[in-house]
Image (cartoon, rainbow, N blue to C red; front, side, top):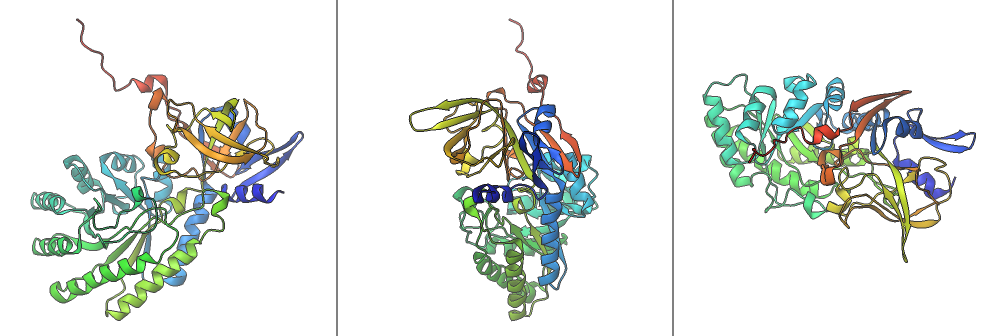
Length: 446
C-alpha cells in the first residue's frame, strides 16, 4: 500500500479496514461497509466508532495509573460533541461529563447521568444555567466573582444538596495553539487572576460554601506540554499560600485538557497521550513535594484527544469542476457541519470510500455547497480521480464539528450513527424540513 494512503488510514478509527471486494476494495469501520451506510442513511453522515473511543480512554486510564500515585479522574468534554447516546456512553464508562449551560445539562439529564458525575463550566452562566447546575450537577467551576455572589445567594436560599465548587484560575500564560483557542493568558475572558481567586476562596470559606477544587485550562489543541509546568507552579504556589493562610488545600486539581490530535498525514508522528500524562503527573508530584503539599486528586479533560479520531464524516460528490489552477470536488456538506476550516484554518485529509487504495495523483480542493468562498473543507490534497456520485470520507471528525454547526442556507443537521462491531445504531436523526421551521411563528395578518 502507498505510504501516503497508509498514513491517512492511520488517522481513521482503529476498527477501519480496507476490505477487498469483487470490483476492487471499500472502506469499512467496525466491519460495516461505509458505502452501504451512506446509501442507507444519506449524506452528509457522521459515524462514531465505539472501539476508537474506548481505545483512547484506555490509554488515558493506563497512563494515569502508571504515572500518578494519587487518585485520578477523567472528564468528557460535552462541547466536543454531545447527544443522549454519547452521554449514555460517558455514564457507562464512569466518566465525569462536562456540561456548559442548561442545554447540555438537559441532555445529561435525559441520559440519566448521575448528579455526582456532572460538572458545569461556563464563562457567563445565566440564572437559568446556575439554577439548573445547582439542581442537576455535582460540581460547578466558578468563573468569576459575580457568579460566586449569585451562587452564594442560592446557597443561602437553602438549595440542597449543593454542588461542590471549584475556582477557575487564570495562570497568565497560554499554550502554543490558535489564538481563538488560547484560554489561560492574562487578558483571557476565562477565569480569575490569582488575586481574585484568593478573594473568592476567602468568601467561600467564610460563607461555608463547599469549595473543593481548583481548575485551570491553557488552551485547546496543543502539542507541546512544557507550558503546563509554569502554570502548575503558579497554581501550586497559590495552593501553598492558601494552606498557610487559610488552612485549606484542594481535594481536586483539574488541569483542563486540550491535548492535540493529528488531523492530517503531515501531522504524523504525533506526541502520544502517554507522553502528555507522564509529563503532567511527574511535574505535579515534584512540585507538590517541593512545597510539602499533599497530592490532590488529578482530574484531566481530554477533549478532542478522546473523541476526535472516533468520528468520520461521509460526503457525496455532487459535481467536479476544473478551473485553470484547481480541481474542485463539490460536496453535499461543509461549512454547516464543520466550520473548523473556516474558523481556525484547520487542515484535514480524506479518502474515497470506494477503492480507497487508489494512488493519489492530482491536487484537489474539497468544498461544500454553501454561499461562502470560505466553505472549503480541504485544500491542495493529492487524491485519485473521483467522479460525481462517489463518496469521500474525512477522518478525525469527532470533535467540534456538529457541536459548532449551523443551519446556514437552510442546511439540515446530519444523521449520526454509533458503530460497534457489526452494528450501526442511529443516535441522531437527520433534521427534517419541518424541523427548520418548528420554532417559527408567522407574522400577524394585515
